[in-house]
Length: 257
Image (cartoon, rainbow, N blue to C red; front, top):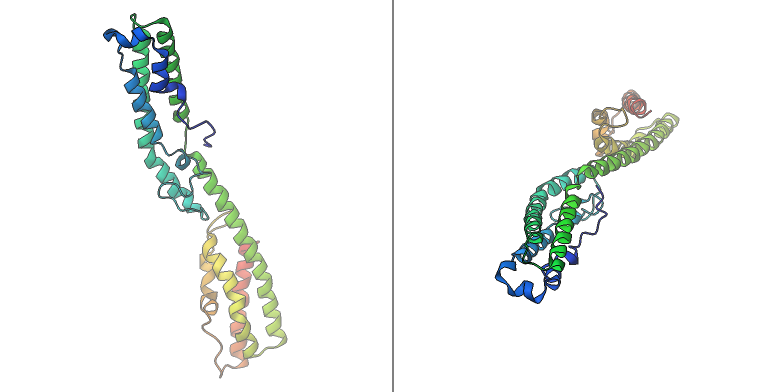
């Protein structure tokens, strides 16, 4: 979830604020030394250990062990695990705040305290319990949402690139058909293959389409600048090679449509 609440520890829930609410007699009498101040210090310290930015998918980049930029869907999965691991710190804070709230509840019932101090303890208890509700509402589902959002964008971008390069591949076929020579084929086959194999190898499944990595295989050697027609290649060899490319391109076009 987006963390939209103020993550700073409230000033009215500090030992300093509590001490200001106590009268001289509250501070002087032994029976009114409640220990609330010490618990507030612990609660504030525990809260300060929480890395809220790491718990929000929109701000998690660069936090704790996360990369500075999330440009792959799996980055959000990894960041979600980092956030999940950090929940131990959140739970420790909840425990400390609950202890302070319990102490505030005992304090407000202390008959030896002034009316002002008891009212302050009551307000502190309520404030502490509110802080607990804030962090208990934190969920990590937004990491999944951002991952899926980026995955969809990545898939759409790669699919658009595949479709564009299918068109370029068709233009390559026409060029070789018009000038059916070994040189025409060899000069253009890598540029007609690699722009397809790269997005096909990374796009994965999506949009109701299966993972097309298998479609890379027929073009893989050409994409790497290999398996070119030899100097002794015959017109028949050229036809076989071009048909192989045509069939591979057709299969890609069918998948992408």
